[in-house]
Amino acid sequence: MQHATYDVIVIGAGPVGENVADRVVRGGLTAAVVERELVGGECSYWACMPTKALLRSGAALRAARRLPGAREAVTGDLDAAAVLRRRDSFASNWSDDGQVAWLDSAGITLFRGQGRISSDRVVEVTGADGSTVTLTARHAVVVATGSSALLPDVTGLREAAPWTSREAAAAGKVPGRLAVIGGGVVAAEMATAYAGLGAMVTVLARDGVLPQAEPFAGERVTQALRDAGVAVLVGAEAASVHRDGDGTVRVTLTDGGQVDADEVLVAIGRRPNTDDIGLDTIGLEAGGWLTVDDTLRVAKSDGWLYAAGDVNRRVLLTHQGKYQARAVGDVIVARAKGEAVDDGRWGRHVATADERAVPQVVFTDPEVASVGLTAAAAEAAGLRIRVVDYDLGAVAGSALHADGYQGQARMVVDEDRQVIVGVTLVGPDVAELLHAATIAVVGEVPLDRLWHAVPAYPTVSEVWLRLLEAYSR
Image (tube, rainbow, N blue to C red; front, side, top):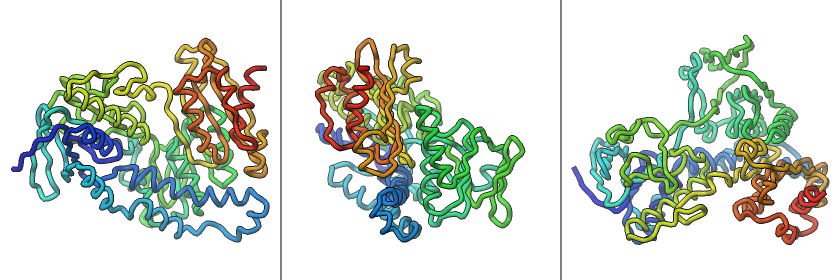
């Protein structure tokens, strides 16, 4: 058995684990990462990159069809095979050679295999060939193992070989019929993508589409999906699933109805990848989410164990996990060197934005871009708020952007502090408006100062002026 010692050991080499290790090395410490699958993780191969590649071609085609002159140049539908080839390229054809080369260039050591915590600061790595390596951390172990799709206890579902987000993102062909169980972000995006690629899609949205977003966002996306030929069954719930001998998947609903498809995608949530990493050896629950303090240290670990990314359940988004990774890497370095820890609100060593300033884009048609709190969440937090809505289609820049532009903007204002605590934008290409909203929320910019942030004319960003005007009435 081999033995090695590093300052920090990171279990999981996805974007979060990579960034933790990078910050640690930049801070002058040594780091090793342990990965059982592909270096680069879910986002690179089965989530962010391939899914957005699947969606982008359809979005570009719809944009062209909304503009006279460009519309006439469009002579056909999407070339599904070409879209899948482009998707493959963005997933690096499921090869992590480039990511491994980056680790090496950054001075980070990679150990391939299943990493398991065996005792305080000790991780045992079992390779595919059964060989083992024992790694000891001088300062910290970081769990960055992410999450995987949750499968509900529906009769026959597992036996029917359902798709999860992984299979949907990496599919080699477009099914003729696709049933989607769920109505959240993955369900809405994959319904959009596969409908655009020519599949007949049925969405079983028990709680509606995008139920965590502002209600108008889910309503607009639902209508757009239906306009695209998607059958959206709000309130529908699967009671059982069976795959016939000819491959047909039959989904029986709780109301007795039935949906037949060639594939069924389950997109109802996520579970932590903590089943087999040795948590039980240190008194924690195997398979459970990891509870962390403000500096992302795991409770009951005597300060040496950290958790970053999905696995701590704070925010299940890649960009937010990478944000946490910066804080984790830097605070480990600070503590190792005996430096002061900046753990106050918005401090360098905490992930304050996780609380009330999380940006997210849903790449449906229309796009949904949001940051901070919804109106309902702000009220639940006890804030005295005012909600301001504005028709995005009434902005001059929107009319130029696309004929018949339809969309809506909402800002949620904390009346006591006179700052924006939430923004939701729905419409074509609103993703590119989001960072301005994020800066306003994170910076807690007073409304009277925002009047001096003059949007260029004619752009869709002029909606900021219109929101402020609507607020002042």
